Amino acid sequence: MSSLDLVDETYLVTGRPLLAAVVSDKARWDEWWPELTLTVFMDRGVDGIRWSISGALVGSSEIWLEPVGDGVLLHYYLRAEPALRGRRKIEKLRSRHAMAWKRSVWALKDELEGDRRPGDPR
Image (cartoon, rainbow, N blue to C red; front, top):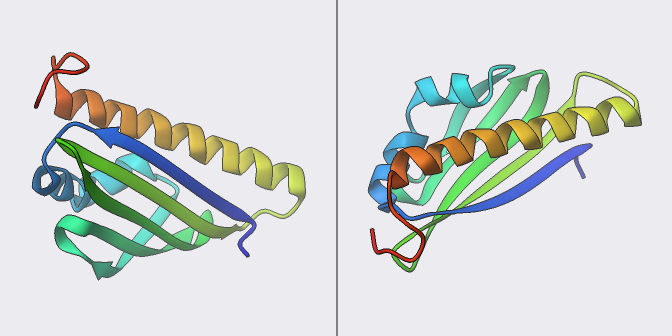
């Protein structure tokens, strides 16, 4: 088991091909995870992408795109060991990464869903 194990799910009302294109954009990776270096070890197209990560964390990360209704459930996984040691430091790092990811994925949701009101079709 990794010291830092983060799982998140966010529903986006958008097309899976569009979301897959955004997820595979390397410029987004630097924006979403500035402390990490990502190396693709499995590009699954519209299903998502898996990376080996290094930098502030060493391990793996994954985004899986699951079609649900008229949108996509974005599953995010991060399993890593931090360069830091100590339980408090690790928990602080986990919390920082969780909050940073939520800000990023909510901004993406706003970008892709635009002015769509809840309950309206895409």
